[in-house]
Image (cartoon, rainbow, N blue to C red):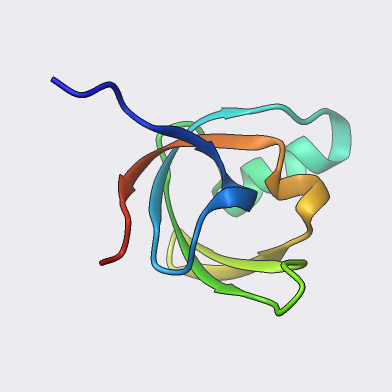
Length: 84
């Protein structure tokens, strides 16, 4: 059995489906993202990346949310589908 591929959300490509495994955030930003649905086990789809890669739009809990590299680089997950 293959070992799951763990990536940071910032490294996801358009169409990737990622299952969140950990959040390395503190304080208000952690609380805010948890409230928006970025919780361990949630499925996140990479919807769109801006031309320079910042911000990136993600779909979680049927809501589309744009995150900056600063936040999305601190969230890790297992790549479930590469969108192809």
